[in-house]
Image 1 (cartoon, rainbow, N blue to C red):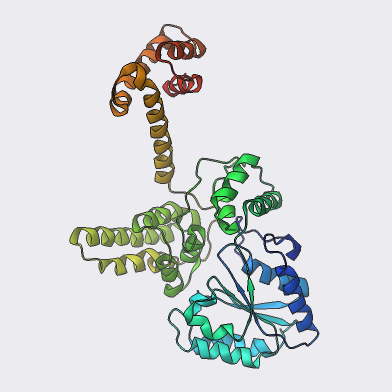
Image 2: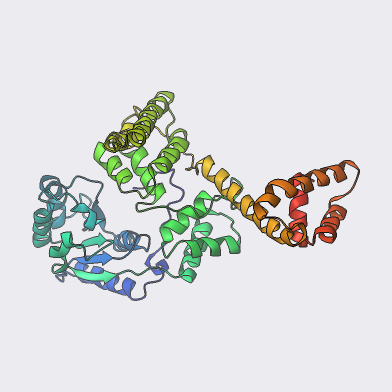
Amino acid sequence: MQPEYSDNIYMPESLDKIVGNPGVVNRLRLFASDSDKGVARTPLMLHGPSGVGKSVSAHLLAGERGWNVVELNASDYRDSETIERRLMSAASSRSIFGKRNLILLDEVDELFRDDRGAGAAIGAVISSAKNPIILIANDAWDQRISFLRGKTEMIEFRKLNRDDLVRVLNDFCASKSYKAKKEDIEMFAAMANGDARSAINDLYAAMGSEGDVSDAMGIRDRKIDVFSMLDKVFMANTMAASLRAVSNSDLTNDMLIKWLEENIPNRYADAGDIARAFGALAESSAYATKAVRSQYYTYWRYMKVLMSAGISLSKASSQGTSRRYAFPKIIKELSASKSERRKADAIAESLQSRLHSSTKRIVKGEMVIISQMIKKSVQEGADAASISEGLVRSYGLAEDDAAYLVKKVGI
């Protein structure tokens, strides 16, 4: 069950809303229909890249058929005893309310990263199951799960194209009563590289308090996407789940620390929990610095444990806050600064023919002088339009570049 505060979670209304993979929905429904009729069906293996609807499709199928979902994923324990205890009975019986169980094994390619009898246990579950089974993998050709390919029917989910992602984002905005400009939705769809979850997370994070898109866009370093990683750290009650999430993230250590630092107060409500979490993060940061200075990178082991399990287990209270995740302020500042530097360089290039100097010197010298001239003109009573016109006439600037310089001075 998704936490109540996860407003970026999007569940389509039905399987008919699954886009980008024609034929998949019909195969899923045929599998479900046969299963309910008592026809023996080989378990399904849904495979393909992250964020294309594999897990969502399985849950929607279960909802459509009235099935109870019994799920195991890579964040859970991977030993044979746990798998047999959680799945064996459910695979051959109905729920306490008489519903058929769907056995759902998500992230199955990650489940065997440190296999402790998991393979044999899952093989036994499949052999004895009387209920439908669906396995989900990003990489169905991973050698660790090669034994499952012969025991399952493979259904491939492909990356979504831009038009499909636009449809998903429009549905998401409609379901949350968000307002976003058409061009912003198209931009996030183009940036997502076929990953609907990433597109939704990016759009959601960039929604301002009034539903307008902010400048926090385009930041998407992920293997486990950053919002999922944060969920696992702040919600985990075991060391293993949060440590695995941090270890699997593609974020640099420095960026991991910045994301966690920004969001501890957004997820923990109790002052003691917040203090302990920041304490663990401070120790983590100290080990990160020590590793770099000493060139002894074994310290990173302690850093990872403190920034993951240290934060997860610092909460004494289960009561969290409902505030959304925030981008680290430093990212926004760097992004804005980079954009301004690019604009300044472009204006400096257009000034070169008149000033006969390097762009670097123009940015640090002549453009500073021009800014002072603009300020003086303002003090003498000139308006923005006349100043912009003078810059165009005197320096051959484009009208929008002249307007930018005037606006930057603060008129």
